[in-house]
Every structure is written in C-alpha cells, then in structure tokens.
Length: 429
Ligand SMILES: *Cc1c(COP(=O)(O)O)cnc(C)c1O
Image (cartoon, rainbow, N blue to C red; front, top):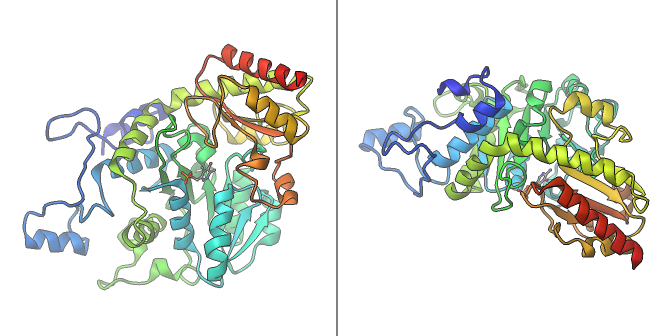
C-alpha cells in the first residue's frame, strides 16, 4: 500500500495519491487507461488459480480493470472504507447494493426525500420482485418506529435533494443497528467524503453517483459503493454472506470483512455487467484530485448566494442547510465538515415565475445534473420530480415555485449578477 493511503494522510493528500502509484511499465505518473477486455495469463495453472481466487490478478474486463480498480480504491481510502467497487452509474451502484441486501419477503426503510431514481428502483423492480419498502422521515425516531425483523437495510442521503435536509447520521445509524439492520448512505451530496464521511459516523456502507461532484465537470456517468466492513452480518438474516463456497469459505471470510462489496460486485459486475468504462474511471480519478478544492470553492459560493437570495424580495424562501433559517442547520453543523453543499433551492411562488426566472438566466444553464464546474439550474416540479405524486413532492420539499441551483466554479460576483438580472426580468414580465 502506498504510504499516502494510510488513514493518517490528510484528505487532500489521499485525494491525489491513494490507490495509484507510478506505472511500473513506462513510469507514467498519471494513472494509465487500461483499454482492454482481457488479460494474458502466464500459463494454464495461473489462469486456473486466478479463477479459483487463489492468485491475485484480473480474469476479464467485466469484473476487473486496473484503472477502474484504482478509482474504487482511492474513493474507498477517502471514505475510510474497507473496499470500494465502481459501477457504470450511481443507479447501478444503488441497484447492486440493494440486490445484495434484499430478498423477496424482506423490507427496506427508505428516506422519503431519497433521489427519484432510488424510488424508481423499488417501484419498477424490487417491489414487483417481492421486496417491501417503507418510506420514512430520515430521523432516528421514524426509523425506530418503522423497524421490524424483516428490515434488511435503512437507506438515507447525506443532504436531501433539493430540500437540503441533513439527517443526524449517528442517531439514524444507532436506530438502524438497534433493529439489526445496516445503514446505507447515498453520500453523493457529501462529495466523495469531502463534506461528510458517513462510515465514521456509524454508517455501514456508502454509495455514490460519481457523475456529480466526484467527476466535477459534467462529462460522464459513473457510480460506486464503499463498504465500511463494520456490520456484523447476522447469519440468519443475511444467509448470502455466510453460505460456504465450493472450498468451504464464506463471502465474509474471502473478502476480509468487505462482504457487501463482494456480493454487490458479484451481482452488479459479474452477473449483470454494470461495468464502469476505464475511460470514465480515469476521468473520475482526475476529478477526485481537485475535489477538495472544488468542494471548498463551491460550498463557499453557495453559502454566499443563499444568504444573498434570502434578502431578495422576489424570493419567498431559500432552502440551504448552511443558513440559520434551515431546520437542519444545527445538525448540518455537526454532520458536515468544511461546507454545506453546493446546491441552493429557492422558491419564487409558482411555476410560471420559476420558469420565467430560469429562462432569463444567461450564465447558469438549464441542465438536470449536479456538481458540474458550470452552474446549472432546473425547475424540479416539472422536471426531476415531475413523476412523483404532488403531495409526496411537497413532503420532500419540492414546491411549484422551487428552483434548484447547482453552484459551479464561476466567479461568485458573476453568478450573483446573473441571478439578479434574472430575478429582475422575472419581476418585470
Ligand atoms: C444522480 C444521483 C443518483 C444517480 O446517479 P447516476 O450517476 O445518475 O446514475 C443517485 N443518488 C443521488 C443523490 C444523485 O444525485
């Protein structure tokens, strides 16, 4: 292991070093892109040993790629995990994680403010398959009240989209564990661990859409799972982790505690084939190297813009956990480090006003993505959240007049000027 992967190395140092070393071939300092589907074995017995798991080395490109594995290892080092697995998208990471945990007859507690795609995974696949889902407020009391013997996972997000609410992860983890279930945190908004490391707060695993702040430039789609290895998998409730293989070893034994990562990789990569391309993995590694700087800059600009928006007469409400007016502010101060995220939601009263202001923006693009170097805005009511029942939308903090702004790397004054002229144009129309 590279010295810089040790937990004592600071986050910024790990962000540029962990998981990679100069290439032993040409000595490339940047991580090479291994564009290959297969790997040459030294001889037939070496091939057999790799397939049996007795020799370390890749078998085939669907399951292993050095560039992809370097990205997963670096992200795992940043999150403080035991093992990481990269996937073709955030959705693929979530799907593989849920498939690894749930079986027909089991139940998952899902935050009512979870990402729409996570709800779609349940609606389109897990529920018809026989997995029940209970939507809960992402709070310890609500989790404790909904807990039962059939619950195999509790799933929350670090910062909810777009309401900005921040769960008290330590208390939610304690409630999940008291009921015998692992806590899985979608830490996409926690920016690869730059703002929050849920594993250190008691979560058992985190998933990411690396499409957002990890990539940081809106240039590709990717996802990952990081396993904290902390959960004591109960053999009765999680038989898949304890079933012996042909050699009499269980997944837990084979993978040094990273049984969830092993199982999710088996299902998501080996079986389903939701494999990340090495080209995207290279870009994701590049993204991680500047992540601490981008996180600090975008969070500072977002806080500045949120406070400014709150003082504008056309703006009815601003939801940003960095503002003292946000109900999660006190929790956010404890759970988030170094910033409150780069997304500001603000209300303009109704959909017509929101569309008018969005259409007047010049610097900020209307794009349904987050975490780009360029600032992006959408009207969630008629785009990202349009498929959700109106009452559920309001419960999740999405109203007819809400605009969601993902703050980029532009000069803060230029962004403020663009918002000011758009608000003025909206008021004049
Ligand atoms: C975007 C997003 C996802 C899904 O990730 P993709 O890379 O788009 O598949 C999951 N969770 C959150 C919180 C997201 O913002």
